[in-house]
Length: 100
Length: 135
Length: 130
Image 1 (cartoon, rainbow over the protein chains, first blue to last red):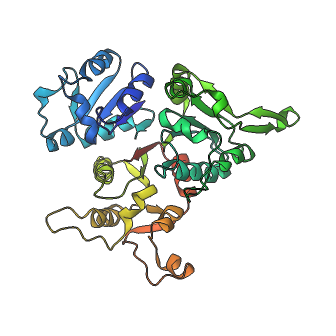
Image 2 (cartoon, one colour):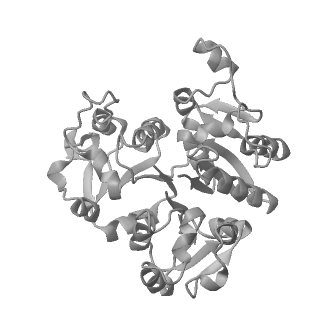
Image 3 (cartoon, rainbow over the protein chains, first blue to last red):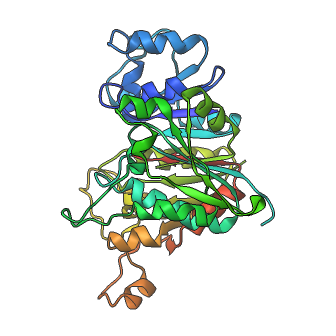
């Protein structure tokens, strides 16, 4: 399953809820304000990094760029993808769950 | 349409503060006519949608909580409520509306529609679905 | 692959309408089919032709209309959500005794059944919201 999270972890429990329900082997794509969850050195970074061995986490490149977040500031192991990659993740997984 | 899919409506918003709960419920009621395999999940603040005793008389908003009681008549009879979400909010099953449905395959026995499930069970249920709509 | 998309927020306040647009555009360019785009909640505000953004900003409504023409996209505004928020086509305006309609080109107004049908007919449903 592909999960998407579009809220900052500092403002919403969406990312926490998503990670608590996502099964090992799931994909997670951070979009919109969700990309703030990809930043290293935040109070949430360790929680997110811990899940990287069971969930593949992506952040949407255009949303990172719009927010001035360069790839060298991301938690190590988080992948960056674009809208084409988003489509590939949505088609490659059997369904999509959006944690709005 | 002969194909039957498993639809799950995932509710994560409290009622009244925003319109998501009300309009989400409208989708479930309309969707019932399509005879799909339907369930609802209540996670996070979504559990507040099922709180007993909602009364909007003094706030002049539409009290749509009675519509949840009609779900059983629409054959929407699997409402999964995440136990952890209830507990985190200081609620338990007795705080929720006693929703029931009548099982025609069991001499119209009245059965509970609300199932309190653990986070792990809910994770399994999500995985089983064909279509997940989020409100 | 056949996608359907649900858009639950209006333009400009939330990024959801932008993300949905770019997702659909990418899917169509990759050769996928988009069976339907269903606009719900404040998402119906994506379909009013009265929108007049500043010149230096994107025109989200016109962008949808153009995509609908280019790919023969089915853009559906939920009738119940649209009525609450004052989005009308000519028929709805007449039926409700209103003095004008405001639906944008390429959109149509229909019932919630269109969303369920999209779920049944499509391989994937992707929801974008606030």
